[in-house]
Every structure is written in structure tokens, then in C-alpha cells.
Image (cartoon, rainbow, N blue to C red; front, side, top):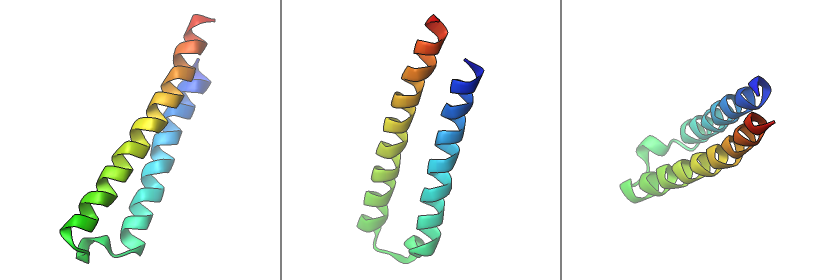
Length: 64
């Protein structure tokens, strides 16, 4: 169970690192407000999907 929990944490950290890197590399702070909003919505949705998928694995590991 510790391993799957670690995968959950690392998955979110990795996703955030990629998103922050993309934010900086695309100079998102100077983009139009609508573009920034779309970026944040996609980032949030990707985080939610990642957490849902990996949290399911943690729950399955807990049952064993």
C-alpha cells in the first residue's frame, strides 16, 4: 500500500512539474486571460483524472 500511495503522490508532483514547466516555457503569464483560464482548467482536469486513477489503485491495494 505504501508503494501505491507513493505512486499517487509522485504522479501528482510529476504532473504539476510538467504543468509548471509548460506555464513558464509558454510565457503563460503574458497570454490573454481566456488562454490562461483554459490552461488552468486543463491542468485541473488532468490532476483530477490522475488522482482518480491512482487513488483507485490505492483503494484496491488497501483491500488486499
